Length: 248
Image (tube, rainbow, N blue to C red; front, top):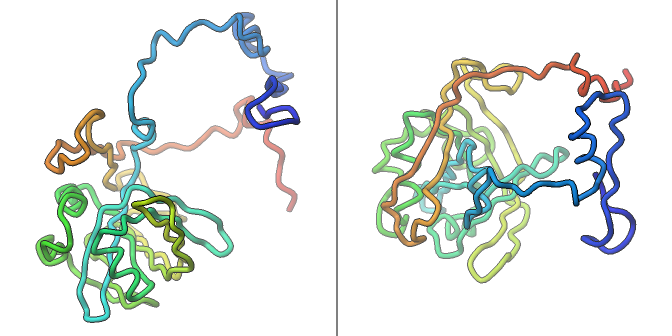
């Protein structure tokens, strides 16, 4: 659906044409745009943090290295790929962190995709300051030589991505948005095929902390999940057959 022309958030929404598909009458009424036919969302509850329903994802362990060789790790959840050519990521980094200081020094970093057994490392990396502890040494991680940057890859991880910083953009009073250009991406072939996790792969899936936990409570219980099973979309389904075929 898309808004009609005019100011964003104003006007009715046009209904996407679904001709050719069969729906029960009550569903057709709901999809017609008649909000007087919509029932209340009684099966839903309202929570304070909108990121929670979307928090099931592989977290990133950000690895940084200072000019003097100092290594640091940080749990990173506020990140997203942005653009394919050139491939890049956008990552939110707190200016008060050791990671931020090292990023300013060297303008490069690595993010690693942790394996399930690395949950304790992920929680620790996100709960302790690099100014008070040598988190790399305490975590017992094994460094591997990167191809382009002077920051190590993490041997225990399932994947590692090398970055050089393109821009650092002030976001608010606390965070900068770091734009990292991908220099290389390394994945363990035993867990990937054509860039997709294989069934049986064991990436750590982060659920985060329970909603309502005090932001300063670093010892609050954190939750994780496993990949379980993988499956493919059925491109012969009535809906997916509507996707235009790519021209050779």
